[in-house]
Amino acid sequence: MEYRKLTSAEISQLTANGCTAEDWAAVLVTWEPDQSYTQYIRAAHFSGEVRLGTFNGEFLLQGGIPVHCGITNASLHNVTLGNNCVVRNVNDYIANYEFGNCCLIDNVDLIYTDGESMFGNGEVVSVLNETGGNEIVITDILTSQTAWFMATNAPSAQALKDLSDKYAEGIKASVGTTGDMVTIRNAGTLMNVCLGDYATVDGAARLANGTVNSCEKAPAKVGKNVIADDFIFSSGSHVEDGAIINKCFIGQASHVGRGFSVAESVIFSNCHFENGEGCAIFAGPFSVSHHKATLLIAGAFSFFNAGSGSNQSNHMYKTGPIQSGFLERGTSLASGSHVLWPLHAGPFSLVMGHHISHCDTSDLPFSYLLEKEGETWVVPAINLFRSGTYRNVQKWPGRDGRKDDNKLDIINFNQFSPYTVGKMIYAYDMLQDFANTMDSESDACSYNGANFSKKSVDRGMNDYGTAVTAYLGSIFSARRKSLVGGKDTGPWTDIAGLLAPVAAIDKLTKCIVDGTLESLEEVNLAISAINDKYETYENNWAAARIEEFYDIKLDSITEEQEAEILEDWKEAEVEIREAVIADVIKDLEMAELDVDGNSFLRKIQDADLI
Image 1 (tube, rainbow, N blue to C red):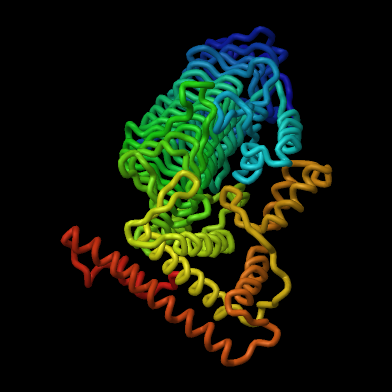
Image 2: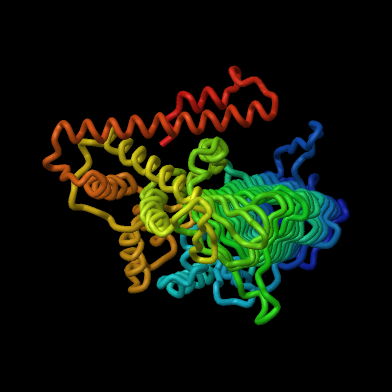
């Protein structure tokens, strides 16, 4: 963009408008030689190098009030304004900033960049262990997957931290920037903050050392009374209503508000946090906490819901707050629950009551963890055919609010996958071993800090077996022609929303560690490539399990064997559907609601549940 100096006539007009400058020669404009917008600049003070765009448009404020572009009552030091901006009523000054086109800066205290800054990039966030050891280096392009590798000290953790530091160094600048169509109104202090296109800061009390990533399709908003230090907010995120943020990453389309206070945490896409408190948490996609008196501390979770008054303890008054817990995808904390970390719950579990035994039920998905007389009792598989489980699974894809073309987190919504079904197969064999050692209904056994009753073991075996049969049958029915034996992918893992074979993750890790992947952008593309192969990986895994389960070879399967698989699948589907429908009806009748006209019940009756 070409700039010119002000003419003597323009300087005279600006002076008559109450404007002053340390050096008028340092005030440059993009105006054509025969253009002048001095009538729209009043009571302004300029120092350092100031570059001004044109002022030939209007803004419509709320209520339809027109405001012509220009500068009124503001001090600008080393500032560049794009075309058609409004800057008015700056109580202190704006220093060391470049604003895009069509920006509105109205009634703010102070906006400045102080020295060199990376604007939140490169900040080290200590999740899970408050004393350190599980640090994540946050950046504009942090994903739940790369963060997971860092937080869990995976073999690639240090290499990813180094790449993150390299990315952050590339951001370093002594001038802050905003994109186009940015609004900053009724705000306090913004120090070392960058704002993307279409971002809005309306009423924030203080923002320091951070970035608000935003775009036209997914504008981000920072609202009233927000205080945020050392942060990155992603596109489509809303942080408002008195939220207090310290050393945090907030993911795409996430909402944090109503006084929620959170520190040293990462919150990824489509999360919703209000009223309560969080510290040192790893909140994977679709984590939710709405209630007051709810404390989330030092936990890792995704597709998660925290009940009212649920809380955790991450130290035992010995060596400090070093304990942490893992609640795998789809797990919920019931209202009033309390967990003394460490505890590890398997996918789609429900934790109720107080738990101090540090149990590990990660190999028992879809279970209830109950408290009885101070001990943890597990009811395996009971959550498999609960209507609430299916309701949650169905609602998540529809609630993916990410509008940005560049979706950072990889999210696989599948409830049944080689990861969860693999755990069911393992759990079935384990429960069968328990059953063989239990003599009566009154017998109980223990495993990894949890207790089981004979009744729950028998029921768990049946339900896991039904679910495995239904899943393998559904894959066989839908993809028979693409199933080939001899290509087993081995065990699977869940990387904060990404479901993938461990072997594929190991291969990725090697590429990160040996430097084959030279940037965070390349790592993110490689992770996305693994997700793109999900169906192929799933087919290969399912083919191996079908061969094991039915003791057959797919390349020589007979019509009778095919018929047996399909018949078992249909029977399992009927059993699952009847169980879920019965649970829906029970819930509706308890609430004295109409059963026949219930839309969710109709959806369950018509849906593919596996």
